[in-house]
Structures are given as C-alpha cells and as structure tokens.
Image (cartoon, helix red, strand yellow):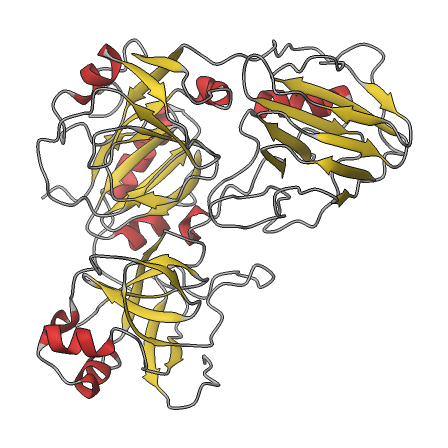
Length: 287
Length: 208
C-alpha cells in the first residue's frame, strides 16, 4: 500500500479509461498521456491498461507502506529517478517537484493501483465524477499483488522522451467549418495562449477570437478527444479525456491522434500554434 | 433526397448527419471497423479504425436508414412515476397559457423516445414533448438541480440522473434511479428506449 502525504494539485488514478459508453453520456476518461502511462507500466512489468497515478503539475509526496517497485515517466521531475524501475522500501518517501517542462507525470507501481472499477475502469472522471475521487492527503492507496510481475532486466523497447509542452499541434478539419470566417485559416494563422483554467475536461485557449458567420443554434452532437470546439466568444476549447460526450458548439478541427498525448503537457501561459495535416484541407476520402 | 451526409472529423471518425440518429446509430454500430457510435440530435458520431473501407461501409449503410420500423428491439415502454411538484411547473404553465393540471396532463399524455444521451451519464434527451410545452431553457441555470428532477427545455424532456447544475425547467421529480453504475445496463434510458410519465401523489415513486 501507498500513503498519500500530499496529493499535489491534480492527482488522480488513471488507466485506459472507459471508452464505448459515450452513447449513454459517459466520457472516455483515461490517462491524458497514454504513451507515458503505458511506458511507466511496462517499466514495472504491468500490463498497459493497469492503473497508475497521474500527477499534473507535480506536488505529490507519497510514502511506501510496503516494498514496491515503482517507475516514473512523462514530465521529468528533479531529484527522482525517471524512466527506470526502482524499489521503494517500507517508509521510503517519493516527492515530485513541479516539473520544469511538461505537466503530467505517471507513477506506476508493480501490481497496479487496486481501487474498484466503475464501468470496467479505475479512471477518475473529473466531469461526470465516475471512478475514484482525486487522491487526497492521508489516502491509503491499495496496490495489486505483484507476485506474477516480472521486471525486465533492460528497459522495454520504445522511447517516450522527457515531455515538454508542444509548440505545434497538428489538426484535421472538423465537421463544422461553415459557421465562422475561414476557421481553419484563422486557427493556423494565429498563436494561441493556454488559459488558466485548463483541466482534464479541456484546454481553453485565448487569442484572436474566431468570427461567427451565423448565430443559429447547433443541435447537440458527439465530441471526440482532441476536438477543437468554438463557443460563442470565439475562443477555442480543445477537448481532453474527460470531455462531455455531446455539445452544441461547432467543432472546427480535430487534433491528430498522434499529438493528443502531447496536449497533456500544456500549462497556463504556454503558447501554441496549429498546423493543418497536409492533404487534410480537402475532403479526401469524404465526398 | 440525401438521407445521410458524411462530414469529416479527423482520421478516426466521421459525423453522419441524419434525420434518424437512433436508428442510424443502431445500423452502424456493428459494422466492421466501427469502434463506437454516438447519436446526437440530428447526427451520429462514428469512431472508426481509420480504414477508408470502413468509411465507405459507413456511408453506404447510413444511406439505407430511413424512418421506418421501431428503433428499440425491446417491446416494453418504461413508465416513470413522477410527483409533479417542480419549481418551474407554474411558470411553464403560464408561458404556455395552461393551468398546472393541463401541463401535467399534456406531459403524461404522450409516449416519448430517447433521441440521444449526453451532458452527463444517463441523461437522455426524450423527444415527443407536445409542442405546447416547448419552452426555452431558463435564462439563468440553477447551480444545483436535484437528482431525479423531471424537466423540459426546447423540444425535449429529461430526467436528471445525478445532482448537477442545470438550466432546464423543472416539472417534478421521480425516485426511479435512471443511472446506476452497478446495474447492467447502467442507464435506464438509452437511445431508442420508449418512455411514458405517470403522475403520482406519493414520493415512493417507481418505474415499471
């Protein structure tokens, strides 16, 4: 078991989430940076979907109450071993300072975080409040049995480099590009600044607002992770894992799936630009 | 007439515009390569494996969907007992030029169908609301609408599955659990489910 001495700003349990329930209004949830989450699991010999602790903005202090094999990936924290499995003896304390670059660090423990599943997942959904509550001071986190786990002698193949905020994000056209003045041109021509109130639901961007060409309401329609939605004030919101399943604001673009993991490392004040995936500007494949 | 229009949504999804979202979603859900379907008010979001053949399959199948036949294979209709004591019951009546008894009579007079879910787990948008009860959302949402609240806004009615902020007009409440993560399925109301409301005076409301 692991005791949470201090949780940090936004620390939750995450796995691959609960996709497949969106038709009932359930967000997909799951680790914001799945590659980093999966690599942390691989380093300690866990299956990829095993629950880890997702730490956004650092600040976690935790004490091992038993002997545990642990690995850290994602945004690098100073003074702790990163991207390697290491052993914590009972009483050992791990402290994650806020990372200098990037935002999201994964703590994998051999055996996995063993909290109850909801709809098949141990992920905390901050929007719909499904899954375990965010970790708090004094919480004792159970860890699954690790007797079957085998920690590889050398790091598993594949590399997740130390994460930093992306400066460029690739996008594809979304379904509603007919409600603003040249929305894709506008999105890609300007630099955007990440707003203060970003969370697992979405990233709010400030910058030159998109200009509406029509004011009629759009009936609610489905959303995906990475969708770039534009509310009435013209400031885009990029949907993250805990996004609502439907929305009535137009989606003008979608972040390329390969860049979604990087969104986890954006922080308030970061500046970012969008670039259209080449060949995506036309309706290729969609006639 | 174009039955379904396919709009781009990145390399792993498309948005199908259709007059029959629940039926269309049902038709697309089991196609090879389709990972998930999410009906909306007039659309179906289809997440897929990225294969152009999957998109072609989706386009072809969406084109065959029409308004004929029942959506839900289940022949039941869910009946929800409601105590009509909502905070906005009188206001809805007055906006529509109806007494509260007339509002209740109208709300309970029709069979609704779940068009789609969204906003929160288990929140089902019920279509079929009589036109006289189509009132806009409140201009100022409430910061807390109790779980079980039965409400109307625009052309839809709904039951709030959990306490949440909300801007719909509250007609009453039910004790029926419309969302329970330990139940299978967890949602009482899913796209295509048929629903009727029944007025009761007691707070021990239930569903049959």
